[in-house]
Image (tube, rainbow, N blue to C red):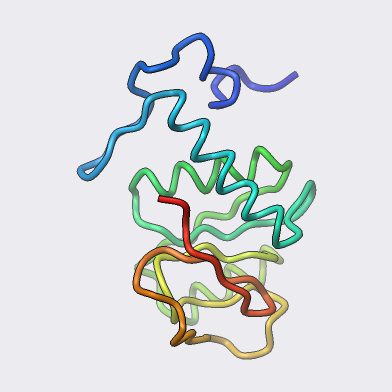
Length: 143
């Protein structure tokens, strides 16, 4: 039995009603479900699935909520990493959780636990939100 608050269960009954909002954007239940599905597809394209751990290192904004729901949609667990952590703190949490994917607000954030170097920089990624996989693959977010 799935919890009743998951966006893919609420999209039909609540449709265009507001679901989440921050200072920059507001998503209806239908829009939230569509965003969660798009991000979940990106996670799945990086082999995230049931039993994996996704580290989400984002500020308290709508993107954080979408990333958490996307991981849950695939059956993955989430470890939220405080974006104000030091390199040492973030690296420790990500490694301790065994995260296979790190979602962050741009290049230079800590890699997934299985990567050798403690921090990566990806100069080919435009500014903005991106995914950092343990093998340094990246993809831009769908918003």
